[in-house]
Image (cartoon, rainbow, N blue to C red; front, side, top):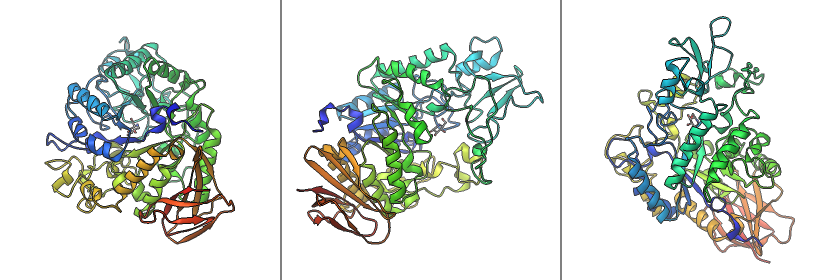
Length: 534
Ligand code: NOJ
């Protein structure tokens, strides 16, 4: 029998990502802050999540909105103070909510004192903390490596006559992780936050940390089509997923393991067979290499089935699965699939085997918002315009109520509030038993009370394009989940005679107690969870 007590908190809990600039503003500057998160902890408790991951809140010139850090061991004044952070941590812990912070070890801000020193002279003791190279034979960049945010990944620095490497903006120089002092400095950053009591890290672009030591050109990507993200013109063979990265991760994991029960999540966009290598061997990798398959998958039963099969089959024996439905870099689920299938997606996320991660606002069905050109903020959109790469639409303020600025702030926020906030907000959805928010809460509640849905086994049944079904089981408790991925009614007949029982939750929220026996009639865009009764 599955004994739920033998699982770690991060295996049983649900992670909720907060993009702090957009969650709740308490000091009327239009930007969310730490006291704002504190103020909303009771909402998160009510929703039933077990951990929050907070995107970066460290001092930053905000060229990439906090992913360009100029001091790893402090809080940017726009978000509050270290005391605010401590208060938030205590208040979260008082409510049984764990706090995961973002760690951005791949690059610093160009204004970080380490880089300021590094660029000041070739003889600076920090020179080799970053990746400096002489110009290529033609005086141009040392090789063909591209920045994720457009153009060459190399920027020339006239003062010392060399180029430095940056996988993202020129304002985000990459650290040289081959340097022992860099490793030690970042380990100490980790200890600083672990000593304060954080429960873990989400490690930014962890698969980028090590680059080829021979600086070989990246090969062309023959599948690239004009109009796609220009970074994809080349395969990132020599700039990401280098074999040496696993030793670096093992070093970080060793720091995590100096403390009790802390978590390391890695941000990794790689195919499944490469992704799972980031679990490491014998517990020296990430506890959870983020699995973004649900973000990119074709939304049909066959594709979902084969993806889950491939993922489950590839997991190492010690690898605990996880699933992510959205984040601050990707189009929102309600926009990708539409409002109706967003309900089905919620049921899938919260009944799969593995830790679910939910992005703020997705529980309301927030959509990608239209951002007027004069309000664009994302440097990616500014550098590579017109390809739909910008992330502002998925970062708009949380919609708390129907008052001006959606209850997010007293003043005009840094990004506009989405126009649907009067109809779509927490206050309204909390009192509507049929809202997506009510569905999320019911799903989270059921997952938490039923070990079968949480840590139980997973077995999938035959899928069609329209319908995807599976069984979750712990001991005698056995559940059928059947999801209609289409907008048409679907009648499903199962071969197994044991598939009979009673519906305990439908995405329509009105079919409780209905019985089924080898057959279920699913309404358009409906998912159901049924308890099998034999
Ligand atoms: C990944 C983060 O999720 C993204 O928001 C950021 O722009 C890049 N890393 C660079 O840090």
